[in-house]
Structures are given as C-alpha cells and as structure tokens.
Length: 414
Image (cartoon, rainbow, N blue to C red):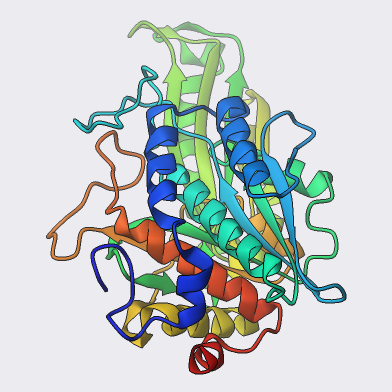
C-alpha cells in the first residue's frame, strides 16, 4: 500500500482511477475541516450543511433528515437495479482534543475522538466516485448515502434514520469504523457478531434511614446496594447461557454522606453487554427482575430504569464474503484481516438488524507504529492514507452489491 492509500503500482483497477480522480485529496481536507469543527450528537448542523453542499456541487440532491441534522442522498444509476446503502456517523464526543495538529478542535471540550470525521469523508468520497460512474452510465442501480447523526448517545440516531424510511427498499448496507489496532492500508472484518449490544441500567433504592448504631430501625440501603452490586452480575451468569457473554458492569454508585448515618437514598448505574441477540432480548426483563429479588429481603423500595441501547452488530455471512472480495480487489488480498469481536456498542447494529450488510474495521494506525492512542481518547488521530482506502473499499463494495461485473473484470477491460 502506498502512502496515499493506493494499491501498489499496476495493481489498482483502472475503473478506480477514473472514478476517484481528484476526489481523495479534497476528502482529506474535508476531514480536517470537520475535525477542527466538531459537533455533539443532534447538533451536527454545520457538518450536515458541509456534506450537503459538497453533494449538491456534484450534481446530486441531498436532503436533511427530519431530526434537523443528518443527510440522505441517492446516487442514481441505471434504472431497474438494486438499492444499496453506505452509512457514516457524524457526531463528536464531549472530551478535549489533546493533539498539537493544525486541524485540532476549535470547540473547547468537544473532539472527534472516535473517527466519525473519517467515516463522513470516506462515505462522501465514495459517493462522489459513484456519482461520476453514474454520469458515465456505469452504475447499475442506486446507492443511498446516509450520514447519520447521534451515534454516541443512547438511544442513537440510527433509530431516527430508520423512522425516516431511509432504509426502505435497501438490499445491502455497508459501513466502516476506524480501528487504531489495525494498520492503515488494511481492513478487519468477521462474519456474525462483531460488536456487542449495549444497554444501560440504573437502580435506585429508598427507605427510612437513621443511626448506624440502630440499623434494625432502618432500611440499610448501603448494604442492600452493595448486595445488588455484587450479586446481580453473578446471578446473570447462572440465568443465561455463558456462551452468550452477557455481562453487567457497574460504573457509578452513590449513597450516604456521613459515616454514622444510614442514608435514605442509594443509586447505582452500569452497562449491560452481550454478543448474543437472544440474550440481549431477554436482558431487559431479566436484569430488573434479579435486582428486585436481591433487594427484597432488605425491605427497600426499588426503582429500576433499564434503557435499551443497541443490539449486537451482526455481519451477514453472504455480504461479508462479498465485502472481503471487494477489499481484496482494490487493496490486495493481504489487506483483509479477521476482526476481533468487541463488546463496545455501535448503533449501525440497528441497520444490520433490518438489512443484511457489513460493518468493517478500517485500519488507521501508522504502519510500523508500536502503539496508537485508542478510540475515545483526546489524543486519538489517524493515518490519513486510511481515507483513500476507505473510499475505495466502499466504492467497490457498493458496486459488488449492485451486481456489477467484478472489479477484476472491469480492470481487465480497462
């Protein structure tokens, strides 16, 4: 892989060069612009306008989603073909940008620390290449570009995209997510679950407090809460098939303000994760049930808020085979790796629950680097050659899903 994300000399199909001539460098600059002007979930107004403007100047007809942020745009080729979708997310995270780069965030406390700026540039670049193919009569169908708001919150913006009807009629859907554990120039993917379901749970216990010298006259909320914290995860492992990998991890707990006072209120919050869709469906009833069972002997009043987040992201087997082939055709067979499963949530899972498709992990680590800052860190950054790779991957994946001749066949004719 060359520094600008091209395949080695002589290996790149001719159609790629025709479709992407003059596209990649502007997309790198656009990524830097978005990175310097990050916007939080449901606030991606500037980013949406920027994306829409680029698409309009390419002769396309984008529309803003009903939520007020997010963009949908069809690239229309020959009539009668399939409809395929490419998805990007656009929102940033509420953390400081700690890098010293010219495109450092100009918004205090907000940064693109998860690569959504790259995702946006990649889908937009692929869309521009597809538009060029459509204008030349070489696009055998229609490709819908979906720039989704609010991926970083629960429930995510994917649900608003689905409610808008943006996936109606779509036969395949593809997305990429930056992965700092994979070198730029490579992509990791796997069949089946690639990310986990992520829900949140908050438990609130209340009861009459009092002096720690006379606990029998109170509801000992601290002990009750401690029991809930310790026993709920353990009991889950006995109520669910262990192969499902269902886990509950507490991240916050609060109770009391003095050493000799039993409080009247106690609260804890955590996340529930699993790679198994069946276990995820059951968890919303099972977790609150276990919490109430554990707290019952303490006579505390129990309130449980269980918020469904996202299901597991499950890559379709047939679509994954085609995706691997597309990557190999434009980057070379050595660029395709087997992805590790992650328990992190990704609301592209809602798309995959509706339409067969693939979430791939786009390598963004500088080749040869011994380590790289992880996602959701203020110093996270990418090797920008990954942008060219991502554009090529999604372009080839869309064409393959539309049933066009294989990129190798097109290269032979080119």
